[in-house]
Image (cartoon, rainbow, N blue to C red):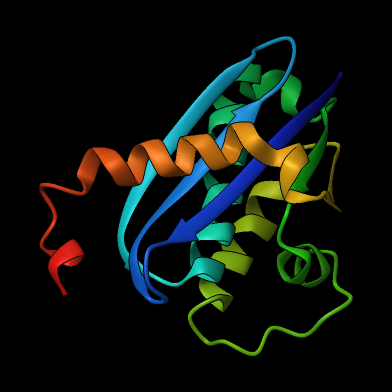
Length: 144
């Protein structure tokens, strides 16, 4: 089985209130958001991949993950290049998330990362902004 996933992360301020957004394609067609608190844009991009792989693992079921190919589409070229092993990770805050992604990847037959223009990632971007909007009145992070 092959599944396409779109992920996005964003923060209002860098760092600032941050969220991750995920759209998992057919056959599931699900959308998820996660409010993170204070984080950078790059940290949110990585968190979105973690959310995507965790949710996908639950949707597919543990017995079928080993026969599942995952294509992750992101509009962050930096994250794609780092996750694909072509760029070094400079930020120590990213390393734990990178390791978590690596550990999640081994559950699947394959996981690949692909850069797409922002216009092709609108669903994941929408999930990020909905999550940030939902928390904008309740989080002291928005008043910094």
